[in-house]
Amino acid sequence: MSATDLNGRETAPISPDALRIDADTAIAEIVEAIQEQVRGRLRRRGAVLGLSGGIDSSVCAALCVKSLGPERVFGLYMPEADSDPESLRLGRSLAEWLGIETALEDIAPALEAAGCYRRRDEAIRKVVPEYGPGWKSKLVLPGATGGSRLNVFSLVAQSPEGESRKVRLSLEAYLGIVAATNMKQRTRKQMEYYHADRLHYAVVGTPNRLEYDQGFFVKNGDGAADLKPIAHLYKTQVYALAEALEIPEEIRQRPPTTDTYSLPQTQEEFYFSLPYDKMDLCLYALNRGLPAEAVAGAAGLTPEQVEGVYADIRSKRRTTQYLHERPLLVQPVSERGTGADSFPEPAGNDPHR
Image (cartoon, rainbow, N blue to C red; front, side, top):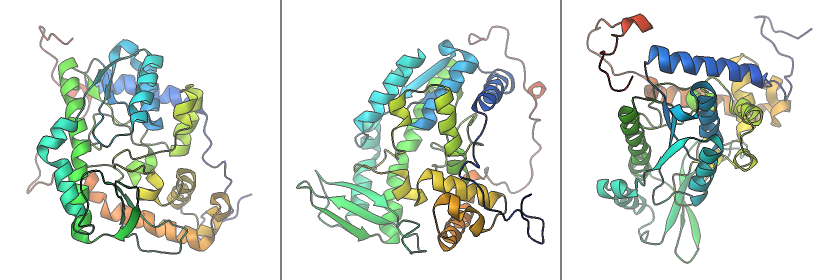
């Protein structure tokens, strides 16, 4: 019998297996939902998604293939100047394994023309004046177990000679770097919607629950999509689906990465401050109203460290709430219903049907 507090909430320690799911049942549910959403609600012929060589996009691609068939799934490779070559190689290996059609869209020229790299470097030079050609960089946060409660970003800059330095970012420099690099996600999404419009397909977003909850996406960039089939799943559960779907082992073994900055960068050091499995357990426990003591052992943390993670989760929810907001209106506007019957039937001569 589980222990509870005076409010009836569970207080007994949770197991490291708290996030275990029946992967086959979850897959069947998502496959059915994709079919209904793409062909029913959205009235589209298939699905488009970016292939990064990561676990989330790979699982989403495999789920779309099971749901719609490989002939109705279109994958995009969208490298740029700072991309890890492994992303393209692994993305190609996945597409070949799935048997889907793909296209390569190098977005570096578009980013160069828009000033993405120039604007980023100008922002970096506010804290590292000598930063220029041949230099590399990334943004990092202090780890959640390091004793600091202040999530203040630092810049790691590496000279052409390989010398690295870590400097605290000013707010102006930080905002300038993020604003410039966000162009990458927004440019990729533009390409996804181009191909979706061309094919009369729907765009698939690939965030997992941890990313979706914590605002780890760019508004109108990788946050934009017509459907997000794994947003209800913790990252740990996405890996369980990947195993059941038999996603290639080298993709399942690849550490989660942002693949945004020129220096290698994990999601942990950039945003979450903890490995995904520990973050998943803390988010799960917080969502169930469990005290820090109930998850500390399973997460391999002290109760004090868990309280710090809880505070960080709540903080990120507050500061990224606007990412989830629809455009704000001065007055309410009547809206069409959301059911399939609310959408007009395509014209009889629609070439996409």
